[in-house]
Image 1 (cartoon, rainbow, N blue to C red):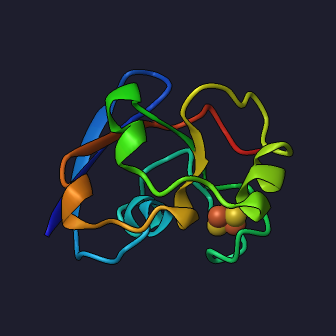
Image 2: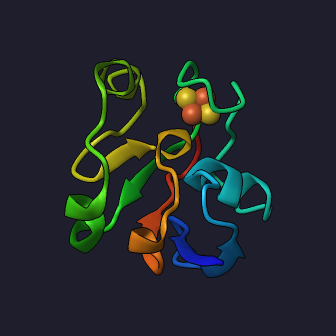
Length: 106
Ligand code: FES
């Protein structure tokens, strides 16, 4: 299992454990973590899985592809560490990853 920690905008910290290969979006939605919607089901088409990966994890991620980059331009309040949760597949290398969730996705 891979441990993922989400920090909500209000400071609430939730750690969940999910199977390898699960996406960050699925890890959040499947564990009812507020702030991540995942409306398109992970097709990189809605940007409602926007989250902020903590700086120390950024260089362990597979870089965003062009489609993700253009969807991120639609996400509100983007900034350093902005990624689409559905495009981050959890591997052993990401065990322990920490991400902040936005206030909302709309
Ligand atoms: Fe829609 Fe990630 S779930 S872009």
